[in-house]
Length: 81
Image (cartoon, rainbow, N blue to C red; front, top):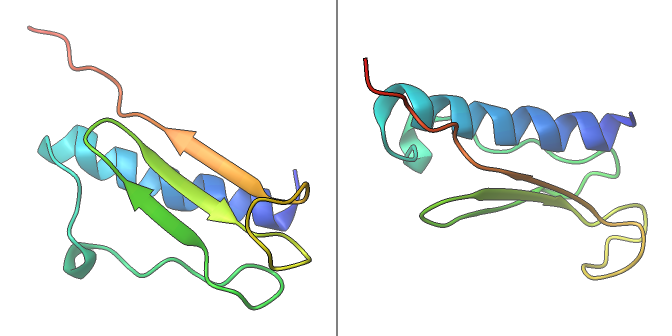
């Protein structure tokens, strides 16, 4: 796993962990801003109602090219106790 892949995974997991604990996605004020990728560009973060996507544009810095890294995560469903 590359450094960029690890960063994307860590950011996505932090958001889904928050959702699992609080039942909602975090606001920007509640979590640290995504770090820069290994090439100094900010990671792109998109959250919708069911998923979080964290994208690194890769070495070329351009979205939508073959070196992009995308981590997509959904919170685990809670089971009734």
